[in-house]
Image (cartoon, rainbow, N blue to C red; front, top):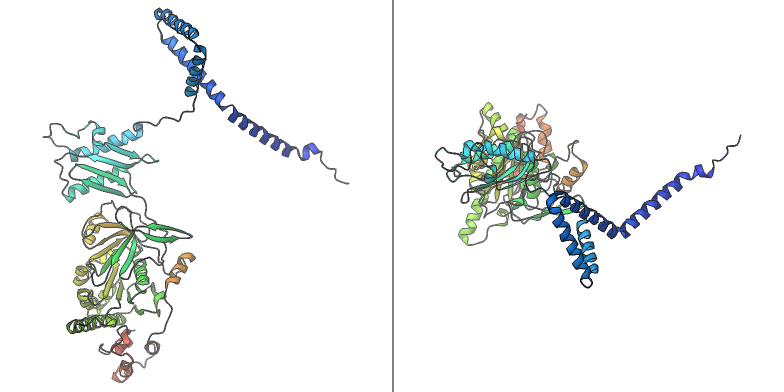
Length: 564
């Protein structure tokens, strides 16, 4: 049976109703716009009438007659004055328009009840620290006026304190670090945990300003930064601490961010860097970021004590002299670094004595990056061998005139295991991850002006260059591009910065040694006949020659072939 169509009123009735509703809404809006002055005046007349009724109700009965006589006299005078009724009508309409205007809700002058209670509790908590029994007019006392102690305050949307100015008495020992640390800890606990607070002490005015710092950007990936040779971007910090910004790219957008720039070279006062942190805090990310920036103008030697392949992407790249993860290779590499540092110093000294500029092979920067080197210290101690970190004494002491820079990254609890030259000559310090105020002060040499928190994103910490101020630091995201858990965008950003893969001068000898290590025959092949054809392959004039081909080394090849 054929299907009969629905009536037109049922088929398109909903569309007609929607169209009619839209027309009615448009007409109402247009009428409201046209009649807005009349609506405002009518509202004002209603408010004036209500005000008149309230005034009449508040007037005592014995005075109502005099009030009626006064109103009647005013009306009579206005009626007798030329153009009086017209002027009275205009005045009435103006007053009605003013009273009928749309008023925004008036902002409260003071804090509400919950904010007042929070300020009172904070004031009471400061009384034991800012009060004295001998004070005749104490500013802080139990049950006192908190508004005199807190002249300025502000709250965020959640009702927590976002800014506060605290006045304290002149006899408070604000020059002692322990006393100031107690006050900062108390204010951070009472104002709300989980945020970073910045404290500014005004010793002359006896005032303490507390401010909440915004989180540092964590979405800045590795990229080419606008810097000069000798400048390395460690990360980014707050705009109030530095006077320089760098343009960075965030996806398709670009903005200026204040950086923490570490300067190396002949005129640097902090030629070497020490980075400490908890596992997973981002010290390896910091080393990869430094390596990618160093490869633009210099050569890099990497020592991987973690043994997890975090630097496999740099193996065989142009400018990467070695990526060592074994005890024998690490020892040979550091011996070559010490010999190369000595060679550069001798060459530069001879040029200075002759009145000539330094040779070109001594000007190219050489970077030595060590990740968790204390692991090799423990192995050397167990085997009764020499500590490989002792070979860094010459590069650390005399690396600045030889353009040799040493960067050491290790865990925070391994600070005591580092050698004395490492702790003494690394004046640039970085601490990543959660750390207590005591740990930050012991590593950085000065306490930070902010309160450390327990939960931090990877690459977040503090940095101090020499005797400068302590900066908050966020390392640019430079993950291992070969890690499957890394986002594709970050992997592509790191791979785009890698130099092209090249074959070193001794690239043919390394695979032969690696193959012979797995066979039972390399033991008799470790003698002098095998090392003789390898030594002539590296000329003395090549300062960037890898470890196996450097002539000043005492037979480095047999040392490498003994590694199991």
